[in-house]
Length: 212
Image 1 (tube, rainbow, N blue to C red):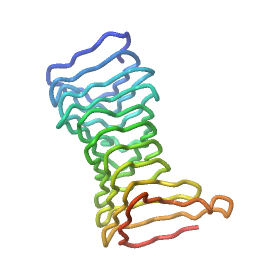
Image 2 (cartoon, one colour):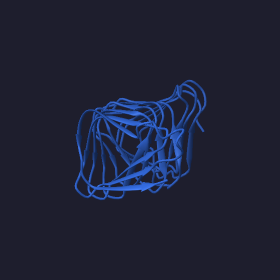
Image 3 (cartoon, rainbow, N blue to C red):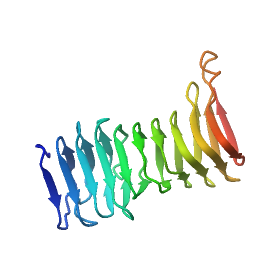
Image 4 (cartoon, rainbow, N blue to C red):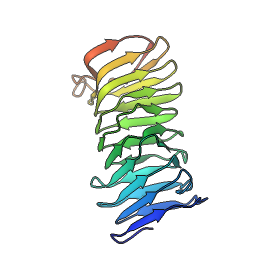
């Protein structure tokens, strides 16, 4: 647990695999293995995590005023613990984000990473806004009610999931020939809401699976 407003600088290799709770202040890493492989990371009110090297964390959660900053060229993999989590803060910088594991990562805040976010496995639920594009690989799922202000690509065997009463918006949506589109229509009261919205372009492909 990190408390206090000061900065904690991690400069050496670490094998830490427990939970990291940054309640206050700033934690900064300067190399790829300095954070270890924590089972979970939680960022409290106003807390900040600055990554200076490739990192893998089991799950990510945080307050809406928290920030995760990823340096250019740095890859962050989230989800290895297979847990569901919600991160309501900001993800900034010029790094790369990868969703791994079988759980659901909900991004409820503002993600300003310019690079493409990869959904390799599990579910990425977008309820906030994302500046960069998203690619959903085979076995991955994208869902939510937020906005991807860029291109959403669903690769072969990837899944775009929609639920009644919520709309996932992207600038363009491209569905590869063997992509999956899973939709749950729900009740008539919520059925008048569009499930997906492509602002400027749509490439259709794949298989449509409907449940009620």
